[in-house]
Length: 379
Image 1 (tube, helix red, strand yellow):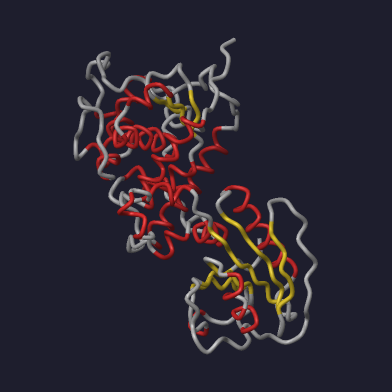
Image 2: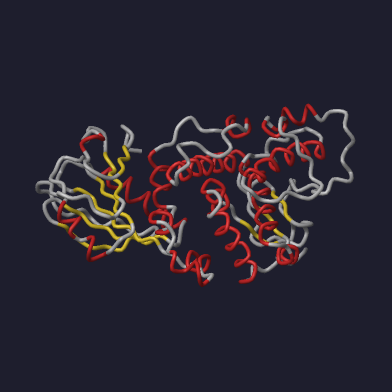
């Protein structure tokens, strides 16, 4: 049995640098790359994916120019996100790989990244689904000399650390959620509500019908202070932009209205989902307060911790929480409330997300901030 390749600090820096560089090009692609689990393997020529994880040859990666590495990783992540391994079924492997590569190379090019020097491009075909491209390639040579090789793997490499084994359908659902989150983050970063690949039939076919409140909450928290306020230009002249981003922590103040109009199920749903975000994104830190006409707390929220019992039960006044902003200086404020209460006279500089249960105040009643609505069943 092959010994697993060790994940070294150098490998982690390579992957982290690629994620940070891509953030400056496309919020959509950067979100997908952030979601992907990228692990080392010397059994892949350069990189590959089994649909669940992306495998990267550490020696090859260290030898590549940064933009080539970024394009290589995005290529494999898009294969995984679009379920190209799962969808092949009984089709001929090499032709399927060529069809999938043709589509993905078009997307990598759209991100402004290089594709392999001799890779095939076709502006019409690359906007179709992989099944349609596969059919169009019928009768062509089997591509023995293809530069990109077979990067869609039937199984994890034997030297990959911590091999996974989720059912294919579960993996596909998780990638669909990642695509939905990527679209959301792209829209909030100035993408006018659509992803940069909207004309690609691959993404249209796989697009979820709607984005539930949990995905909207994740898109709000899966960012950094840089994403909310623009990057700190003091670092640019000193070449420290990437290093500053790498250490960036987002702090969130979570306020829960306990005036009696918000039920316990909604509280548990929101706080539990915030804990899930904390577990998935180590750069996020959250502090919890309960509030009626006063603020009760603070409690540091951590993944898996028991949710503190609610305190309060009086009337509703939002101002005590907003008065705490100067003390805590959070990057974002998330306030669970039905919206019926006294608002501050002036909007805060802190980005605010109002989480509203069924029956709460209409969107136009909130004088500032974004409004997120829980479903009727609270789940």
